[in-house]
Image 1 (cartoon, helix red, strand yellow):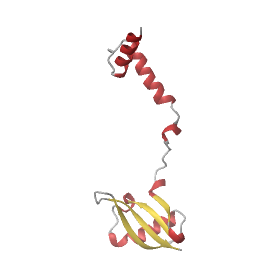
Image 2 (cartoon, one colour):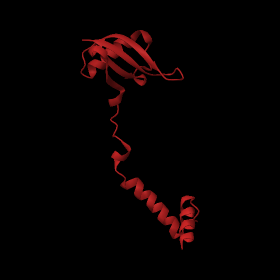
Image 3 (cartoon, rainbow, N blue to C red):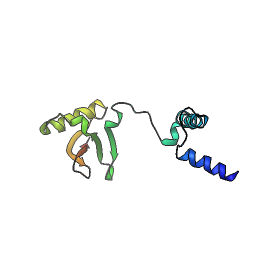
Image 4 (cartoon, helix red, strand yellow):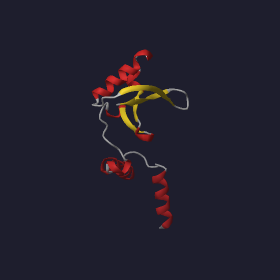
Length: 121
């Protein structure tokens, strides 16, 4: 009895059943139930609002005003116009700030992932 249970469990884990068998249908049903019935919070999955995470305020030292600007927003902007563009983007978000400095944030492969904008009121 125990041997047949272990054999069935082994075949289940290794997906060893042929299609159109009842065991196969049970496995597919369990997978679908997991996909559709698992609460979203288990995976910390959040609904993404387009454009919402492209600009974010960062906590800086000594109450410094810093913002994360996604690289996509400045992709086609020439380097000489980036400070003005960031200022306009922040104003559109309701943040009336003067951009003092803009530094690229690079990943381990030296690709620009975004920019950190240093501002003052």
